[in-house]
Amino acid sequence: MPEKKKPHKMITPGMEDVLNEDAGLEEKKSGNYTRVTTFSWDEVDNR
Image (cartoon, rainbow, N blue to C red; front, side):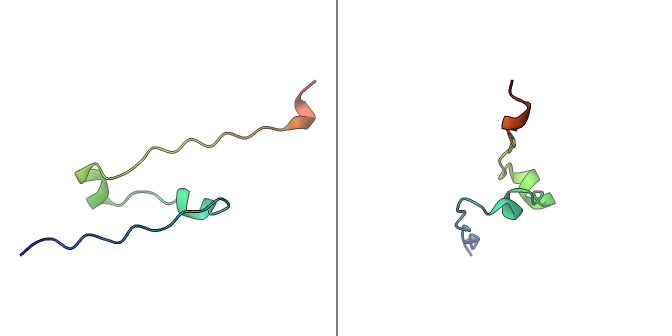
């Protein structure tokens, strides 16, 4: 019996909560995860 694939979530700008979720154990074992880096710029500190 073929495996059922999980539907992909649609990610749009501003959905930071989805990006902050950790990959599950099953996803880590299969290599189905993406490393995410958050970059923040504070213009007040830019002199």
